[in-house]
Image (cartoon, rainbow, N blue to C red):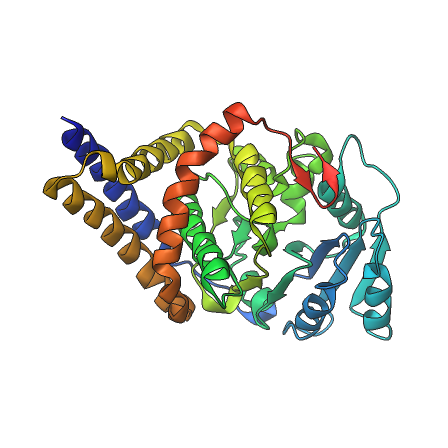
Length: 364
Protein backbone atom coordinates (compact mmCIF):
# COMPACT_ATOMS: atom_id res chain seq x y z
CA UNK A 1 0.00 0.00 0.00
CA UNK A 2 2.76 2.47 0.97
CA UNK A 3 4.66 1.63 -2.20
CA UNK A 4 1.57 2.56 -4.22
CA UNK A 5 1.35 5.90 -2.39
CA UNK A 6 5.04 6.51 -3.12
CA UNK A 7 4.47 5.63 -6.79
CA UNK A 8 1.49 7.99 -7.08
CA UNK A 9 3.37 10.98 -5.70
CA UNK A 10 6.53 10.10 -7.60
CA UNK A 11 4.48 10.04 -10.80
CA UNK A 12 3.18 13.54 -10.01
CA UNK A 13 6.72 14.65 -9.20
CA UNK A 14 7.90 13.30 -12.56
CA UNK A 15 5.07 14.99 -14.45
CA UNK A 16 5.85 18.31 -12.78
CA UNK A 17 9.50 17.96 -13.72
CA UNK A 18 8.57 17.36 -17.36
CA UNK A 19 6.29 20.42 -17.38
CA UNK A 20 8.95 22.65 -15.80
CA UNK A 21 11.54 21.38 -18.29
CA UNK A 22 9.29 22.32 -21.19
CA UNK A 23 8.69 25.78 -19.73
CA UNK A 24 12.33 26.56 -18.98
CA UNK A 25 13.39 25.88 -22.58
CA UNK A 26 10.88 28.27 -24.10
CA UNK A 27 12.57 30.73 -26.45
CA UNK A 28 11.81 34.44 -26.80
CA UNK A 29 12.29 37.06 -29.49
CA UNK A 30 14.93 39.73 -28.92
CA UNK A 31 15.26 43.33 -30.01
CA UNK A 32 18.20 44.97 -31.78
CA UNK A 33 20.79 47.06 -29.95
CA UNK A 34 19.50 50.33 -31.39
CA UNK A 35 16.16 49.60 -29.71
CA UNK A 36 17.65 49.11 -26.24
CA UNK A 37 16.09 51.24 -23.52
CA UNK A 38 18.10 53.23 -20.96
CA UNK A 39 18.80 50.99 -17.97
CA UNK A 40 19.62 51.38 -14.30
CA UNK A 41 21.36 48.70 -12.24
CA UNK A 42 20.52 48.87 -8.52
CA UNK A 43 22.51 47.12 -5.79
CA UNK A 44 21.59 47.43 -2.11
CA UNK A 45 24.57 46.76 0.18
CA UNK A 46 24.64 46.42 3.95
CA UNK A 47 27.85 45.46 5.73
CA UNK A 48 29.37 43.89 2.63
CA UNK A 49 32.99 45.01 2.99
CA UNK A 50 34.24 41.51 2.14
CA UNK A 51 32.19 41.23 -1.05
CA UNK A 52 31.32 44.63 -2.50
CA UNK A 53 34.58 45.21 -4.40
CA UNK A 54 34.19 42.04 -6.48
CA UNK A 55 30.63 43.04 -7.28
CA UNK A 56 31.66 46.57 -8.29
CA UNK A 57 34.42 45.29 -10.55
CA UNK A 58 32.01 43.02 -12.41
CA UNK A 59 29.50 45.86 -12.79
CA UNK A 60 32.22 48.12 -14.15
CA UNK A 61 32.85 45.60 -16.95
CA UNK A 62 29.24 45.55 -18.13
CA UNK A 63 28.75 45.95 -21.85
CA UNK A 64 25.89 48.28 -22.83
CA UNK A 65 25.24 51.00 -25.42
CA UNK A 66 27.19 54.14 -24.57
CA UNK A 67 25.35 56.59 -22.35
CA UNK A 68 22.39 54.31 -21.68
CA UNK A 69 23.49 52.64 -18.42
CA UNK A 70 23.69 53.97 -14.88
CA UNK A 71 24.59 51.99 -11.76
CA UNK A 72 23.23 53.00 -8.35
CA UNK A 73 24.83 51.47 -5.28
CA UNK A 74 22.85 51.92 -2.07
CA UNK A 75 24.79 51.86 1.18
CA UNK A 76 22.04 50.63 3.48
CA UNK A 77 23.36 52.10 6.72
CA UNK A 78 26.43 49.88 6.81
CA UNK A 79 28.48 49.90 9.99
CA UNK A 80 31.65 48.54 8.38
CA UNK A 81 33.84 49.82 5.49
CA UNK A 82 31.27 49.13 2.76
CA UNK A 83 30.57 52.82 2.08
CA UNK A 84 34.26 53.71 2.02
CA UNK A 85 35.07 50.93 -0.44
CA UNK A 86 32.25 52.06 -2.73
CA UNK A 87 33.48 55.66 -2.65
CA UNK A 88 37.02 54.66 -3.51
CA UNK A 89 36.00 52.45 -6.42
CA UNK A 90 33.45 54.67 -8.13
CA UNK A 91 35.57 57.83 -7.92
CA UNK A 92 35.90 59.17 -11.48
CA UNK A 93 33.46 56.59 -12.91
CA UNK A 94 30.51 58.62 -14.16
CA UNK A 95 28.09 55.73 -14.69
CA UNK A 96 28.22 54.92 -10.96
CA UNK A 97 26.26 56.72 -8.28
CA UNK A 98 26.21 56.01 -4.56
CA UNK A 99 23.42 56.91 -2.18
CA UNK A 100 22.97 56.21 1.52
CA UNK A 101 19.59 55.11 2.86
CA UNK A 102 18.39 58.10 4.86
CA UNK A 103 14.62 57.91 4.82
CA UNK A 104 11.97 55.26 5.24
CA UNK A 105 9.48 55.21 2.40
CA UNK A 106 6.04 54.36 3.72
CA UNK A 107 6.38 51.39 6.04
CA UNK A 108 9.24 49.78 4.15
CA UNK A 109 12.11 48.15 6.00
CA UNK A 110 15.61 46.91 5.26
CA UNK A 111 16.59 46.01 1.73
CA UNK A 112 13.18 46.84 0.25
CA UNK A 113 13.42 50.37 1.60
CA UNK A 114 16.96 50.71 0.23
CA UNK A 115 15.79 49.63 -3.23
CA UNK A 116 12.84 52.02 -3.10
CA UNK A 117 15.20 54.91 -2.28
CA UNK A 118 17.26 54.10 -5.38
CA UNK A 119 14.22 53.70 -7.60
CA UNK A 120 13.05 57.21 -6.74
CA UNK A 121 16.08 58.64 -8.58
CA UNK A 122 16.69 55.92 -11.18
CA UNK A 123 16.66 57.33 -14.72
CA UNK A 124 16.55 54.02 -16.58
CA UNK A 125 13.39 52.67 -18.16
CA UNK A 126 14.64 49.18 -17.30
CA UNK A 127 15.67 48.39 -13.73
CA UNK A 128 18.11 45.53 -13.14
CA UNK A 129 18.87 44.31 -9.64
CA UNK A 130 21.58 42.13 -8.18
CA UNK A 131 23.17 41.74 -4.75
CA UNK A 132 26.43 42.95 -3.26
CA UNK A 133 27.73 39.40 -2.88
CA UNK A 134 27.25 38.68 -6.60
CA UNK A 135 29.36 38.82 -9.73
CA UNK A 136 27.53 39.48 -13.00
CA UNK A 137 28.45 38.27 -16.48
CA UNK A 138 29.81 41.14 -18.66
CA UNK A 139 26.85 40.64 -21.02
CA UNK A 140 24.28 40.50 -18.20
CA UNK A 141 22.65 43.88 -18.73
CA UNK A 142 22.97 43.71 -22.54
CA UNK A 143 21.42 40.25 -22.79
CA UNK A 144 18.63 41.05 -20.34
CA UNK A 145 17.72 44.29 -22.13
CA UNK A 146 17.55 42.48 -25.48
CA UNK A 147 14.39 40.69 -24.36
CA UNK A 148 12.42 43.88 -23.68
CA UNK A 149 9.96 43.88 -26.51
CA UNK A 150 7.16 46.47 -25.96
CA UNK A 151 4.84 43.98 -24.24
CA UNK A 152 7.44 42.64 -21.77
CA UNK A 153 7.49 44.06 -18.23
CA UNK A 154 9.85 41.68 -16.41
CA UNK A 155 12.84 39.58 -17.44
CA UNK A 156 14.43 37.21 -14.93
CA UNK A 157 17.73 35.34 -15.09
CA UNK A 158 19.57 32.39 -13.60
CA UNK A 159 21.87 32.56 -10.60
CA UNK A 160 24.37 29.96 -9.52
CA UNK A 161 26.89 30.04 -6.69
CA UNK A 162 30.64 29.73 -6.49
CA UNK A 163 31.19 25.98 -5.94
CA UNK A 164 34.50 24.58 -4.72
CA UNK A 165 33.53 21.81 -2.28
CA UNK A 166 30.58 19.68 -1.24
CA UNK A 167 29.07 22.33 1.04
CA UNK A 168 29.16 25.14 -1.51
CA UNK A 169 28.46 22.83 -4.45
CA UNK A 170 25.14 21.63 -3.05
CA UNK A 171 24.05 25.26 -2.59
CA UNK A 172 24.96 26.06 -6.20
CA UNK A 173 22.89 23.18 -7.54
CA UNK A 174 20.01 24.06 -5.27
CA UNK A 175 19.89 27.58 -6.74
CA UNK A 176 19.67 26.22 -10.28
CA UNK A 177 17.10 23.57 -9.36
CA UNK A 178 14.76 26.08 -7.72
CA UNK A 179 15.19 28.55 -10.57
CA UNK A 180 14.29 25.92 -13.17
CA UNK A 181 11.00 25.54 -11.32
CA UNK A 182 10.62 29.34 -11.20
CA UNK A 183 11.46 29.75 -14.89
CA UNK A 184 9.25 26.89 -15.99
CA UNK A 185 6.20 28.22 -14.17
CA UNK A 186 6.77 31.82 -15.28
CA UNK A 187 7.25 30.88 -18.93
CA UNK A 188 4.05 28.82 -18.84
CA UNK A 189 2.09 31.77 -17.45
CA UNK A 190 1.78 30.52 -13.86
CA UNK A 191 4.47 32.44 -11.93
CA UNK A 192 5.44 31.27 -8.49
CA UNK A 193 8.79 32.86 -7.69
CA UNK A 194 11.93 34.54 -8.98
CA UNK A 195 15.19 35.74 -7.46
CA UNK A 196 16.09 39.36 -6.75
CA UNK A 197 19.81 39.00 -7.45
CA UNK A 198 19.07 38.44 -11.15
CA UNK A 199 15.87 40.32 -11.82
CA UNK A 200 14.77 43.16 -14.08
CA UNK A 201 11.57 45.07 -14.77
CA UNK A 202 10.20 48.15 -16.48
CA UNK A 203 10.13 51.14 -14.16
CA UNK A 204 6.76 51.98 -15.72
CA UNK A 205 5.31 48.68 -14.48
CA UNK A 206 6.91 49.20 -11.05
CA UNK A 207 5.20 52.58 -10.78
CA UNK A 208 1.90 51.16 -12.02
CA UNK A 209 1.74 48.79 -9.05
CA UNK A 210 2.51 51.70 -6.75
CA UNK A 211 6.12 50.82 -6.00
CA UNK A 212 7.33 48.70 -3.12
CA UNK A 213 5.60 51.00 -0.65
CA UNK A 214 2.18 49.91 -1.96
CA UNK A 215 2.92 46.19 -1.57
CA UNK A 216 2.54 44.18 1.65
CA UNK A 217 5.83 43.88 3.53
CA UNK A 218 7.77 40.73 2.75
CA UNK A 219 11.29 39.47 3.41
CA UNK A 220 11.23 38.39 -0.24
CA UNK A 221 10.54 41.66 -2.06
CA UNK A 222 11.24 40.05 -5.44
CA UNK A 223 8.34 37.61 -4.91
CA UNK A 224 5.95 40.46 -4.06
CA UNK A 225 6.86 42.54 -7.08
CA UNK A 226 6.64 39.56 -9.45
CA UNK A 227 3.05 38.84 -8.43
CA UNK A 228 2.02 42.50 -8.36
CA UNK A 229 3.15 43.02 -11.96
CA UNK A 230 1.57 39.71 -13.00
CA UNK A 231 -1.77 40.84 -11.56
CA UNK A 232 -1.78 43.85 -13.87
CA UNK A 233 -2.61 41.36 -16.66
CA UNK A 234 -1.21 43.68 -19.33
CA UNK A 235 2.43 42.65 -19.69
CA UNK A 236 4.48 39.53 -20.29
CA UNK A 237 6.86 38.19 -17.67
CA UNK A 238 9.58 35.93 -19.04
CA UNK A 239 12.49 33.84 -17.78
CA UNK A 240 14.99 33.19 -20.63
CA UNK A 241 17.57 30.44 -20.27
CA UNK A 242 20.71 32.24 -21.44
CA UNK A 243 24.27 31.73 -20.16
CA UNK A 244 25.18 35.35 -20.92
CA UNK A 245 22.72 36.66 -18.33
CA UNK A 246 23.92 34.40 -15.52
CA UNK A 247 24.88 35.79 -12.12
CA UNK A 248 27.21 34.06 -9.65
CA UNK A 249 26.65 34.70 -5.96
CA UNK A 250 28.67 33.70 -2.94
CA UNK A 251 27.40 30.66 -1.00
CA UNK A 252 26.54 30.74 2.68
CA UNK A 253 29.70 30.21 4.73
CA UNK A 254 28.24 27.91 7.37
CA UNK A 255 25.15 25.95 8.39
CA UNK A 256 23.81 28.80 10.53
CA UNK A 257 23.72 31.30 7.68
CA UNK A 258 22.36 28.64 5.32
CA UNK A 259 19.57 27.89 7.80
CA UNK A 260 18.61 31.57 8.00
CA UNK A 261 18.63 31.88 4.21
CA UNK A 262 16.37 28.87 3.74
CA UNK A 263 14.03 30.04 6.47
CA UNK A 264 13.76 33.52 4.93
CA UNK A 265 12.91 32.07 1.52
CA UNK A 266 10.39 29.70 3.08
CA UNK A 267 8.65 32.46 5.02
CA UNK A 268 8.38 34.46 1.79
CA UNK A 269 7.06 31.38 0.00
CA UNK A 270 4.09 31.13 2.36
CA UNK A 271 2.41 33.72 0.15
CA UNK A 272 2.72 31.45 -2.91
CA UNK A 273 -0.39 30.80 -5.02
CA UNK A 274 -2.25 27.49 -4.74
CA UNK A 275 -0.18 25.99 -7.58
CA UNK A 276 2.94 26.59 -5.50
CA UNK A 277 1.51 24.56 -2.65
CA UNK A 278 0.68 21.70 -4.99
CA UNK A 279 4.29 21.68 -6.23
CA UNK A 280 5.60 21.81 -2.66
CA UNK A 281 3.28 18.97 -1.60
CA UNK A 282 4.57 16.62 -4.28
CA UNK A 283 8.14 17.54 -3.38
CA UNK A 284 7.54 17.10 0.34
CA UNK A 285 5.85 13.70 0.14
CA UNK A 286 8.22 12.31 -2.50
CA UNK A 287 11.29 13.29 -0.50
CA UNK A 288 9.70 12.10 2.73
CA UNK A 289 9.29 8.68 1.14
CA UNK A 290 12.99 8.69 0.25
CA UNK A 291 13.90 9.45 3.88
CA UNK A 292 11.66 6.61 5.07
CA UNK A 293 13.57 4.05 2.98
CA UNK A 294 15.21 2.34 6.03
CA UNK A 295 11.73 1.68 7.48
CA UNK A 296 10.10 0.41 4.28
CA UNK A 297 13.04 -1.36 2.69
CA UNK A 298 12.13 -3.47 -0.33
CA UNK A 299 13.29 -3.99 -3.89
CA UNK A 300 10.35 -2.02 -5.29
CA UNK A 301 10.94 0.82 -2.82
CA UNK A 302 14.62 1.03 -3.86
CA UNK A 303 13.63 1.17 -7.53
CA UNK A 304 11.32 4.10 -6.75
CA UNK A 305 14.09 5.93 -4.88
CA UNK A 306 16.47 5.32 -7.78
CA UNK A 307 13.89 6.67 -10.24
CA UNK A 308 13.47 9.81 -8.15
CA UNK A 309 17.24 10.43 -8.26
CA UNK A 310 17.27 9.87 -12.02
CA UNK A 311 14.41 12.36 -12.46
CA UNK A 312 16.34 15.05 -10.58
CA UNK A 313 19.56 14.44 -12.50
CA UNK A 314 18.00 14.64 -15.94
CA UNK A 315 15.95 17.63 -14.82
CA UNK A 316 19.20 19.50 -14.13
CA UNK A 317 21.52 18.16 -16.81
CA UNK A 318 20.20 19.96 -19.94
CA UNK A 319 20.04 23.32 -18.16
CA UNK A 320 23.58 22.94 -16.85
CA UNK A 321 24.71 22.26 -20.40
CA UNK A 322 23.07 25.41 -21.76
CA UNK A 323 24.45 27.53 -18.91
CA UNK A 324 27.94 26.09 -19.44
CA UNK A 325 28.41 24.97 -15.84
CA UNK A 326 28.21 21.16 -16.12
CA UNK A 327 31.35 20.84 -13.99
CA UNK A 328 29.26 21.69 -10.92
CA UNK A 329 27.17 18.56 -11.36
CA UNK A 330 29.94 16.62 -9.62
CA UNK A 331 28.23 17.82 -6.44
CA UNK A 332 24.90 16.30 -7.47
CA UNK A 333 24.80 13.64 -4.75
CA UNK A 334 25.77 16.18 -2.05
CA UNK A 335 22.82 18.27 -3.20
CA UNK A 336 20.49 15.26 -3.44
CA UNK A 337 21.01 14.45 0.26
CA UNK A 338 20.75 18.11 1.29
CA UNK A 339 17.64 18.76 -0.80
CA UNK A 340 15.85 15.61 0.39
CA UNK A 341 16.39 16.56 4.03
CA UNK A 342 15.60 20.28 3.98
CA UNK A 343 12.43 19.93 1.87
CA UNK A 344 11.02 17.65 4.55
CA UNK A 345 12.25 19.70 7.52
CA UNK A 346 11.11 23.17 6.42
CA UNK A 347 7.37 22.76 7.17
CA UNK A 348 8.22 21.55 10.67
CA UNK A 349 10.62 24.45 11.24
CA UNK A 350 7.98 27.02 10.25
CA UNK A 351 5.31 25.27 12.35
CA UNK A 352 7.24 24.64 15.56
CA UNK A 353 10.10 27.18 15.57
CA UNK A 354 8.21 30.09 14.08
CA UNK A 355 8.45 32.52 11.19
CA UNK A 356 10.75 35.20 12.58
CA UNK A 357 13.64 35.92 10.24
CA UNK A 358 17.16 37.21 10.98
CA UNK A 359 18.75 38.93 7.98
CA UNK A 360 21.69 41.33 7.64
CA UNK A 361 21.71 42.04 11.37
CA UNK A 362 17.99 42.81 11.42
CA UNK A 363 15.02 40.78 12.59
CA UNK A 364 11.65 40.59 10.89
